[in-house]
Image (cartoon, rainbow, N blue to C red; front, top):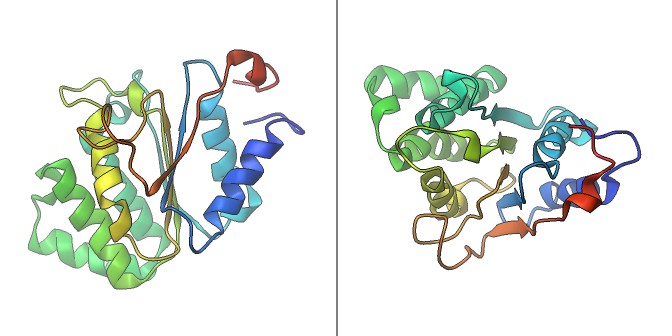
Length: 200
């Protein structure tokens, strides 16, 4: 996590964004390796404002098979949301029973059925954190997740926020190239010199 007294401006900005009803639904933190993105994501998940609102998180890591596969992200987030919210759990259980192969669908299908539809139906306001997408090493590029998040972000219920970080930026055209999506709030990359006070 961030050391006490460091990165306060960035953390406060993200907190204000997450609490703004009229905000862009996604906040993307991008920057070079070693600039403290994961530290900020971890700290955000532990901030007081997240208590009672943090519904799910996924911290990718190339060192662990179950955390380096893009196709595990949405099913894992859905299970966590089901454990956190009773309304979501009821909808999720019904969905899985009627469609047991849903976890094998495309990333678009996974997010729509496992995340977006249950959130909309249950009208839950929550915060979701996804960290280090560039740590994933499966055959599908990490930019595919960014594309899915960008296209599907506007379908989420009001009050639901998604905080993500990677070295990539969410845009149209497969996420890694092209026009930046207007409903993803991007935080531009910082130089390493501005992150020397961050404990990794």
